[in-house]
Length: 121
Image: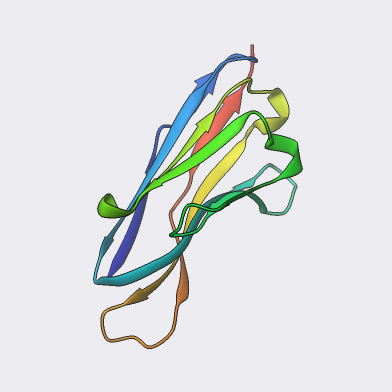
């Protein structure tokens, strides 16, 4: 009923930039927060950036000053602009949305399938 589709991952050299996009579609009534998580090999999934419907953002300390997230509420889309990328940013990046579907009474977390970002020379 709900799909989150990420795009924009790939291979980039250290110091380079990438922009990820995530569009939510389906029987959506309301979206609260949207955000990005990542999971590197052998590590737990961690929050990268989250943004509320009002535009308030929260970033992991490791990406502050380098990553910027913004949201287009009309398109149910969230973006992650990643600059000054480092090898340690290599991970699968997952889109998350906390939303309420039509007919549901609570907000639930939905996830995309993930997009791989590799930072390497």
